[in-house]
Amino acid sequence: MRNLLEYEFDVPPESIDANGHVNNVEYVRWMQDAGVRHHEVVGGPPLLAALAATWVARETTVRYLRPAMPGDRVRVRTWVAQSRRVLSTRHYEIRRAVDGVPLATGHTDWVLIDVATGRPKSIPPEIVALFADGDAEPGQS
Image (cartoon, rainbow, N blue to C red; front, side, top):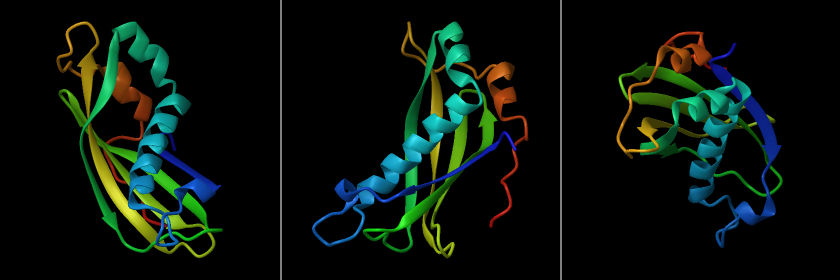
């Protein structure tokens, strides 16, 4: 499914805070990394370069459910829920890989920006087509 990226990684030691669990800021970093990775996997960077455009996060919402701990393996899922005019909404789900326990969910509204002007730019059909599965949320696992 082109509209879904899922991958796993071990919690890095530098993600652990003074409370002995993953710092909340790390979940936001993981969400951003997942979005960038997904865009790269479907071939987005060459299209952005040709359009002289870039994505900028306008708003990110995170719901923290449970802490990730040292030694945990984490599964991150991301998908584009919808794209309209200049805005694309991407959702995220972060779970403990061993048992699927949800750790955090969230979404980011990304705005396409014209690099030369710094102003929002309409998302062209070729960018929308990168996530060809449509504007539907994948089923939850």
